[in-house]
Length: 322
Image 1 (cartoon, rainbow, N blue to C red):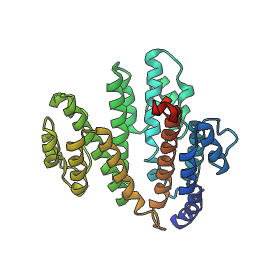
Image 2: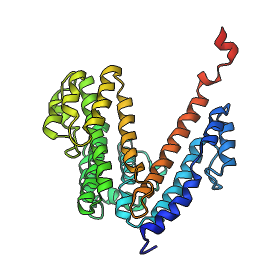
Image 3: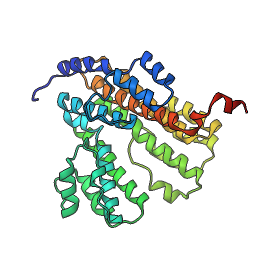
Image 4: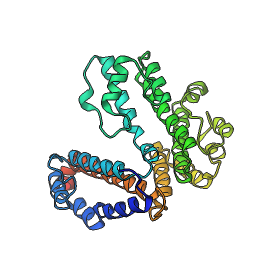
């Protein structure tokens, strides 16, 4: 639809927000004894309501998010900006296709349809080794990755190509909100690389290969964090406009030593930046907020279903008293 205005798109998004699961539904889901009971609750609330939504929570989430993606893409006043949140799907598809080449298996059935690059275009580009129609950084990364054998190196190269594509797009299409959001994402990549590298006692050369040259952190100070003890990290990684938040997160890490918590807290912080603009009728905030809320909702449902399917959840009260 050409010429969509932000007020029109935001109005439509506000209507779609009614599809977000409310507290009462979450309580019922929490009380559900197993995944089947969860599915019943979700169906009663028209979640994953398409006929092909599947018979597992994971399949229902996939169906729901497919519908969300369709809504977002059809309503976006600026597809270049909303596309920034879908390049991760392209990264997954590229890695899957390269994996298929390496193990000599057809992996096309595992590809996601919600990426920016059409699946057929991606398959043809890799098959014919012609990357001119792909974003420059991504095309170059695919060409280089096909000469590699280490899955970690391949993944790293593709991920950086996607980050570069996002960064370059934001330079061409200025948006203060998304720049702030993605700077936190870039910082997250770098902070986690240093924390993991230090924990595994990797040398500075190896860790430097994992660092992305963008974000809000002071790059010189950031590199000094390599090899430092946990209680020294704050001094080098708590820089830039987000230093107060980063300092608290890293202080918690120095006490608890759980890297996954750092990742989760940085994701929450990035989301909060978007969430603060959820009522802006003239900007992209409400559109991205809805997308991220639905993704977070889906992730929570998947985790809950996995927990209900775990053997520990099936332990009876009598068993617990033995």
